[in-house]
Image 1 (cartoon, one colour):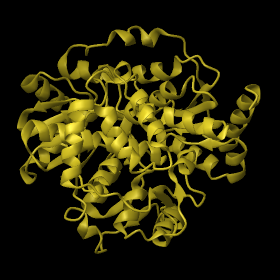
Image 2 (cartoon, rainbow, N blue to C red; image 1 turned 90 degrees about the vertical axis):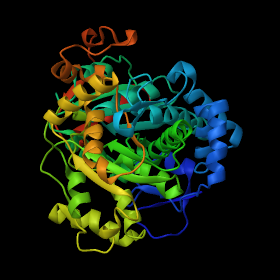
Image 3 (cartoon, one colour; image 1 turned 120 degrees about the horizontal axis):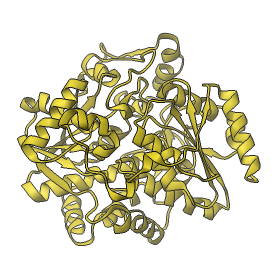
Length: 479
């Protein structure tokens, strides 16, 4: 399998392990495989039996081997077994729970930081360490987080040989629990930087550094945000697994997915799974008040906002969806020149991409399965209460966004709808208390986390200053 940039034409692609250690492609685009491998009914039947007998790591190996064929099979299998071991995620990995109205909840928050980001990050940590050892190289990870990516990345990368992490987050925009998870890590190779502004400012800083080819090469800078294809392909696995689990429980051959998303990374993996032939009917894009993606799928216009509103589902407080380019590349027939014009000078000059009058926009539902909706704080509270009352399950506010939108669209979608869980409710306890009048259950591992010392530096949104901090810390570490 070879990979190309969304801003280039088909040609000589790169192998998986080469793009694994990069973020953006040199032309500013995002990497995608030259083609999507295709699944058959026989494959899904075999994988269902494999899941029942050997569990999640075995299916992860089967899926990932389609995309990472430059890693020897024995090595890739061992990586999957370590990443998804019972002591990391429990057993089974990604169980599903039936909710009312033929909804199913895919539990993705059983990892070390209680968020779905662990599902990809734990694998990525092992992949990075493996490939760096093969090449005798080091890696500097630069990332931005609106909530859960940061802690998931730091917990997955800490202690990994040859890896240093610089993680940007918006000052005061994450929940106290999310901040505590990140900022309590006391490790010279984990550097937390709280940026004045919103998540989009953090993301812009990452892109500014990534676009400085000399600086990026000098410090071997890579990414763990979902601009990294390794993150996306790891998430494809849990769409396959949750589909197989619901199929085994209901006999349904087709399902839909409702995905809370702000950066389009999670649902991009669902799109990839559908393009591979996983029998998915609708892909439900669920946003909060920052409804940039919902607006596009309703109107055909992608319009970047001046800034993201602060909401009670903060991990989706994003006004620039960095993974959206991957889908547009597929939507426009993989026309790299057209994508480069739209996301390069076009987006910079107008702040918008208008596809509403194109024939491709008309294919969003029929060809690609996309529908969308958004929800408000009041909707989230009502949904959390309703699910707790009807099903005895407490969900976090991001998952509540997805349940809300799935309910709004239920009459137009047949069959089971699988909602992808975002995080354990304890990460957003203030909203749970407001909805239910009680604190959510707190796993013992997280007791007292907010009282731990904090290791974080506040900085302005200044790319030159950020580069200076990276230079200084790496020099101290002998890098």
